Image (cartoon, rainbow, N blue to C red):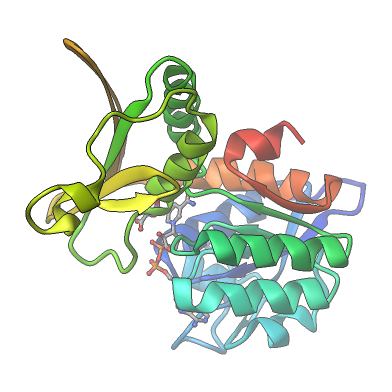
Length: 274
Ligand SMILES: NC(=O)C1=CN([C@@H]2O[C@H](COP(=O)(O)OP(=O)(O)OC[C@H]3O[C@@H](n4cnc5c(N)ncnc54)[C@H](O)[C@@H]3O)[C@@H](O)[C@H]2O)C=CC1
Ligand SMILES: O=C(O)C1=N[C@H](C(=O)O)C[C@H](O)C1
């Protein structure tokens, strides 16, 4: 497909052979305002990114082993869908080269995000990160934040397949941190230190919100926010299907927005409001 007359945004995809990365490369190729200039993956360096993504013709973009090598071809935005252990170094390399970043990879901590924000501000660049780039997962967060204005007792359950390498999910982590900031009333549950039995049974506390991660075959990713008041409960649930398309759509929006602000913005809603 032909590109627009204006200069297209130059994008590097790290995680080019992955579930999201391959579909993202197809979408970038189809977008008139974006062009793929670099691709990074493990184990398949030297292959053409378009061929690996399943496009009918090669793109002329060779998959590299490192982000540093991929940056040599020039870029405006790095998108990362790799692994928790790799993403920080990738973002750091991009920012040091004057390139903005979009982070889809999950597993980063609040401290990681704090440091990425500082790095991006120091270089007057933007970084967009979302635990979940799908629109309906964004609505789970929005509706949960509305409920948190009225109900202080809230816990999260996140469900994923048995091989997911990080815990809790990026979706649940971002939700827990946002609920911690948003809730107006204190929880009424006994402090874990005052209860009998293994404290882990009450979940991991992210911000101040207990998060329980279930890992079982058959799940892709589901996330529930449970609110409780005396005599009633509210559950809000998001279920991901098996397609990466919802994340790709949100990621394209973030790619187009990330150069309009400085520092880190988290959550698709925060990115789109920039
Ligand atoms: N924010 C969101 O909306 C979403 C986030 N994710 C997260 O994105 C990440 C990737 O997910 P998938 O595409 O399912 O993973 P995947 O396992 O299918 O693909 C991972 C890709 O990263 C590459 N990779 C792994 N380690 C690397 C390294 N050290 N250096 C360079 N490349 C490396 C692999 O070669 C592969 O191309 C995960 O953390 C997942 O939780 C996934 C879907 C949506
Ligand atoms: O690992 C995955 O697959 C996914 N991870 C993201 C997360 O950690 O929240 C979201 C997505 O639904 C799939």
